[in-house]
Image 1 (tube, rainbow, N blue to C red):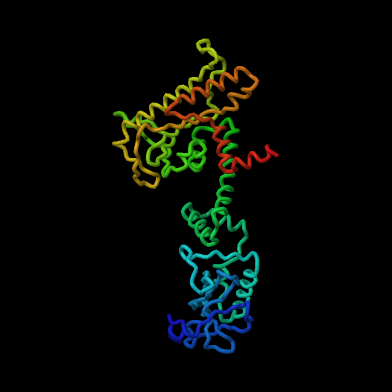
Image 2: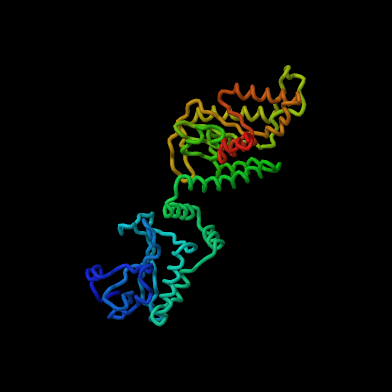
Length: 394
């Protein structure tokens, strides 16, 4: 379909940018092409000068532009306007953005004024332009509508939209850090909610950590650099009935592997009363705690024995290389403050605290941490220690 009767070479020679910051809107108009198959924007006093784009912002370095194409409707015979928004540098070169997408915000400064002036200009040609379909396709939406639209996307579309926004806004590292901290603060609220609920199950914790693996950095700096984290990983071999293969809650992989085993935050670490068999200045561990340690050691043995014959496969079905050399195991269990409430004044609590610490320090392959300790470390990740201590020093 021919859009203009002039050639592309002629069009390139005579086309220009309309700048509403310098010129008035009545200095341009919309006319039919000679063959009646399209229309175009041109100078009012010089129809040979085609307007190729309209400048919407007026900044020193990068500005937003809009070009218009008009397509004839087979139903009404009028022309449907289709805008294209893009950014250009001050030297008239295009600013590169992924997928060439530009987010146009019309909520502050001169940009919204020029945007609505442009729409008003188009509205003056309703005898020529079909604005009905345009208004159905392009609309101004509220913040709530924008959020609802975003929530209707699948995960990949949401990630792409966020990535486009970040690139379009050219956000600094500090700005991105603030965005991530906002997300992490919401995760901390959920963490505290789970921690305060005695009905939180292992499965609840499993699902929470699967989408918040950053929290594991509070256990070990090594876990901050994991390139892959596999949840609910089968690390052993089954018997003749297809049973008996241990499942690790998380397998963390960088150059080498680390296992993470979860129990509930309500799982007791100590027995309620000191057993007669307990030595002086020690307290008896609960059977759940001892069984959990045994489970961790058994998982380590299974992983060491079977990793050469086992493929490590991610959720998106990619096989990754994983080395196993005397793997470390992280054991998350219980609530320290519930078990040891006042070690400074209560002799039983002091014995429990000392017993727990001696045991943890002496465990070479199993690192033991409670849920409330992990929560506190996650809080420090989001809010630096200096900020936490500032109020105490004043």
